[in-house]
Length: 268
Ligand SMILES: Cc1cc2nc3c(=O)[nH]c(=O)nc-3n(C[C@H](O)[C@H](O)[C@H](O)COP(=O)(O)O)c2cc1C
Image 1 (tube, protein in one colour):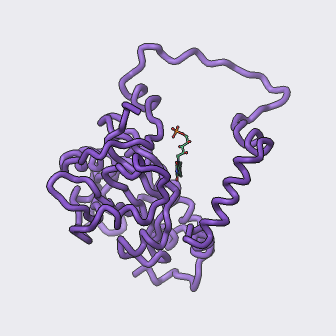
Image 2: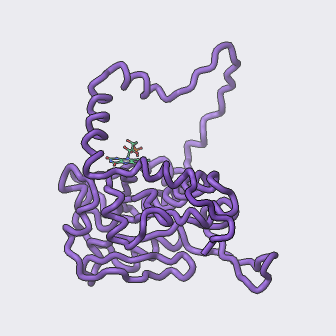
């Protein structure tokens, strides 16, 4: 597949490989984070995330309407949730969460191949090529033992890859620091089949793929917020563990993002 314009090794493959978290480099990685956290000067320099301009005019904007629209409320309420209740989701919850955020919502015929129907999704994608794929690592779903599945945005269905797993097997790839993080009901894993984008755009296609993952992830965060569910974007994972779990090679298809999803614990 996609061999016509394939180079032996693309730049993005080496870059992606070099930024994977492993059980070995995680030690140096966490030392770096600890060293940053214990250097007040660095923390101060980086937390001032407000660009200042000298000698430029500032035009203030009118305050946004105080009677906020429902959508404004959802956007402004979103916050990372790190405390979940061990309450399951139903398959209906999963459908309500994923389909409006990721599912194909309209179709058009391809100009180049008029017999091919193209599906467009609710989030933007460079060239409409949709290199990002979705998997769920489901720990707490009513009527199901923990499972791993691929989610299809074309027909809102799950292709079951592994069933009857232990919850521990699905926790293994993640760096959790307390039990309430582990209580998440499922993790949405986003992978990139970057060649889909790189065949047309070369290495720049990798950038487009990462941006697309961000757009899709935000759709999920906001839809979860509207459903009173909590989400946490989670970079604390061992790439290779997830690759093994979902059966990808980590080169042609690699993990780019994960989101913890579950019922929030508002009592703590
Ligand atoms: C790409 C990405 C990865 C993240 N990974 C982690 C993580 O591994 N662990 C964690 O506790 N928070 C993680 N976060 C959450 C951030 O800490 C959080 O978004 C930030 O503190 C701002 O807080 P807010 O999301 O509540 O607005 C991640 C956020 C992003 C965007």
